[in-house]
Every structure is written in structure tokens, then in C-alpha cells.
Length: 292
Ligand code: C2E
Ligand code: MG
Ligand code: MG
Ligand code: MG
Image (cartoon, rainbow, N blue to C red):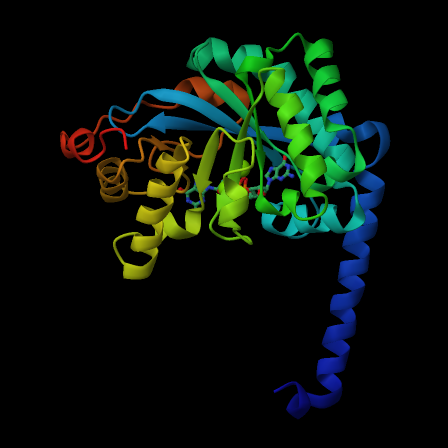
């Protein structure tokens, strides 16, 4: 196809390259230095108990409201921030801002909740994450035991031993650790048992094809089983329907996050998140999932 359209394709390609270079430049100029407070914001997506819809936590998600072009989407923005290295500084901003808003969110959804922050693998490599967390907590007065960090498997690829040490230090401070997007990365199962984790988040990909795709349904069931075997909590991401909710609950995954419960919202709208009652009682789960 590219060959057939010949010179025309080259022009498009070069225009695209130019657009990418411009996007990179925009990111580097607008998202650097002291203007992050003016550019960036957080959205909060609540997490719920699948059984009764009770709010059990919330995740902070990066937003760039005045982003140029298609960089308003994290699927485009985050990879660019990773590529340019800007994610390190922006990650520090996210951490501090989430800690700053912690009190307000907990006042709204309950003080027993945990609030999670996504951390890039680069933050483990290029900054002292423990020092950053300490500083964010000290500056904002936020509580370590209400803070959770979400990391992906990529965080353990570069310097696994160092990453593991860092996580041990964070947990000693009372911070909890969730493994995000589980099942999509280079899941190394022997490794998994060595990582100091509290939670595994089942990637949205598996949840969204639940009950449609047999393989994904089996994978989902296996991840839940694996989490239980390792004494970790499983949290399903991307729960959009009541059928998914009740399947997950029956399969032994009680913690959930997704549009079925709430979309990510600005901090002042968190109080409007409704508590979703279950459509029908599901009593099987407790029978099927007695402690192993
Ligand atoms: P994630 O951490 O797995 O976050 C969940 C993503 O799924 C969010 O997308 C959320 O809006 C979306 N989502 C939640 N429920 C549903 C649902 O029911 N259906 C569908 N279709 N989507 C749902 P978002 O906000 O665009 O973020 C995408 C990714 O960007 C995040 O995935 C995370 O990997 C990354 N990210 C977001 N904020 C940060 C951050 O502050 N730092 C870093 N390093 N990464 C971040
Ligand atoms: Mg996450
Ligand atoms: Mg995820
Ligand atoms: Mg994701």
C-alpha cells in the first residue's frame, strides 16, 4: 500500500514526523519547570466493593486539560512523557498533588479508603522514589497508610533487585503497592512471589472481553486464583457492565473499578459518585472461595 501511493506517502510520513517533533517540543516547553500547576490536573476514579457498591478507594489519573492535538489522551501523552523523560518530574508533581488532595477525597469517600497514584518505571530508576514519597507526605501532611502506588511489571525489568528494595522501604513506611495492568506485560510468575505487593490489578483488556472470549475469561479466572494463592488482593479494572461485576464477584474478585461504578472525575465531583447497588444477590462467591 505504501509503495503504491509512492511520493504521496512520503509526504504524509514526513508531515507526521514533523507533527511528532512538534508535539515533543510542546510537551518539553509547556510541561517543564514551574508551570505544571497551571497545565496539569488530576481526575479521580473511585474503586468499589463489587458486592454492595461501597467505595473502597480511588485512583488519581493525570489530565492535561489544554493539551494540544491528541495529547489530551493518556494513551498518547504518557508514552511521549516516557520517551522525553518528562515523566519523572511530572510523576513527582502527580504524587505531590494527589497527596495534597488526599484529605479532601478521604473526607468525601471515607477515611478507611486508600488513594492510589500511578508511578512510571522511570521514577524507580531516575529518582529516589522513597525520598520523593517522604517529601510529598511531609509537605502535604498526607498519610502514608492511605497512599498506594501503582506500578507495572516494566518497573522490575531494569534493576529488579533495586526496585524490590525500594518497594520494601515504601511498605515499611505504610505505603501499599499495586501491580497495575497485570497480564499484559512480561509476567514472570516466579518473580511475582518475590515482589513486595499488596494488590494485583487485572488489566481492563481482560475485563472488557469477559464473557465474550473464552480465553480471556479463563485468564481472568486464573489471575484471580493466582492473586489469592499469593495472598494478594485482586482488583478488576474497566468494569463496565453489571454482568461483568457479578461474574467477577462469583469468581472471587470483590474489588472493582470501571465506568459501571464511575468515570474518572475532578476532585470536586467525587462526592457525586453514586453507590451502585448490586442487581441481584450473589452468594456463591463465599462458598467457592473459602481460604485456600
Ligand atoms: P491505568 O493506570 O490502568 O488506568 C486506568 C485507565 O483506564 C484510565 O485511563 C481510566 O480512565 C480507564 N478506565 C477506567 N475504567 C474504565 C472502563 O470501565 N472502561 C474503559 N474503556 N476505560 C476505563 P486514562 O486516565 O486514560 O489513563 C491511561 C493510562 O495512563 C493509565 O492506565 C496509566 O497507565 C497511565 N497514567 C495515567 N495517569 C498517570 C500518571 O499520573 N503517571 C503515570 N506514570 N501514568 C499514568
Ligand atoms: Mg493505574
Ligand atoms: Mg491499569
Ligand atoms: Mg492501563
